[in-house]
Structure formats: structure tokens, C-alpha cells
Image (cartoon, rainbow, N blue to C red):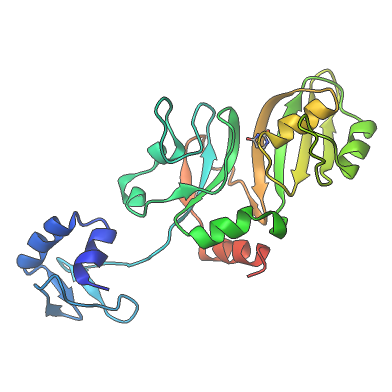
Length: 239
Ligand code: URA
């Protein structure tokens, strides 16, 4: 990879700015000063430093966000703030995007990455990656609903869902539940409850595949996944 591309990718400015930086003589590859922007480097094998500081090169970024309500799961929107608007510059330079969508009024675990292949695998209906949601429902949720979800329910457009695992945490006029599904149809959880005559009043994703939501993240906060977490995600997609 060309040194100017590597430095631009790592947030050292535009290609033009990086060219100026190289001219200052502050960039070294394995201790040799590099001034030519066309110089090829192998970031896995060579040490690149800027002003004595090592540049840790990485191609991909993997973030877990605790998505707040009112924010859109998209990279751009004409009206509303997006989850990408909540990212720091140092993460934006990787041009990440959300892995699937949570509704504007849904909170919780959202993965954001620039690894298109992993994102695709995680979303592929063939991979059956489970997603678990916590919800408040406007009615008593009971055995009948558990049974209905176990067999799959018919959504408003006639689609028969795959089985879902419904756990009732607290039954009452407002019930607390957890639902695990392996699909990601538009508004799926809300529409599954509509199918049994009930309404989701609050929805939060608490788990995606092997990863639970990091509850230490405040709404709107995010963090990078650890190497172990990335590996668990890959395993969940069978890779
Ligand atoms: N199901 C929904 O209805 N909404 C979401 O945001 C996610 C799953």
C-alpha cells in the first residue's frame, strides 16, 4: 500500500495534506525517512512512525453502540441525526455503516463496521444469527403468545415468521418480555406482537449472536469490539 494512502486512511489528512507531511521528514518507515508519497509499505511487516509515534494500521473497525431513540440507523439522512453522526472523527475515517437497522424509536445494541463481508454474513437469513430484544408490551403476555411465537406468526403482509423464543419476565397490564428471533424483517418484533393483538411500547435490542449489549455503554455511547468478540461474531456466522 502506498504510504500516502495508508496515512490518509489513518486520519493524517487528505492525500494532499499527507504529501506536505511527508515533505517535513517526520514520517519514517523502519527508521528511514520517507518523503516520496508513492513509496510502498507493508503495514503488517514494517513500522511506520509519524514524529516518533507508531502508526497502528488497521483496515477494519468494529463498533458496538447503545443506540438511543430518535436516531436513524443509516449513514445519511436529510432530517434526522444518524448513528454515524454520533461517531468520533477517528472512527469516521474508516467509513463505517450500521449492520442492519433498528427503528428510530428502538434502543440498544447496534453493530457498526466497515467490514462488508462480516456485515453481510451477520444479516444473511441463511445464517440464522439470533437477535434478542427486551420489550414492554401494552397487555398481559402469556402462554398463548409463547406458543404462537414458538410456531411462528403471520404478519400483516401474510409473511409467516420463523419460530421465536418468547420469555415473559413479568406479566401484567404492561408486560416485560424478551424475544429471540433469527430474522430481521421490517419492524419484525412490533409486527409479531401486532399479529397476536398486542403493541410494543418500548423496544431495546439486548443481544446479537454471541454478543450481549455492553450495559456500561450509556445511550449514544459506543466502543470498539475486542479481538475475542470479533472472533465470536465470525464463529456465529460459521466462518
Ligand atoms: N423489530 C422491530 O420492530 N423494530 C426494531 O427496531 C427491531 C426489530
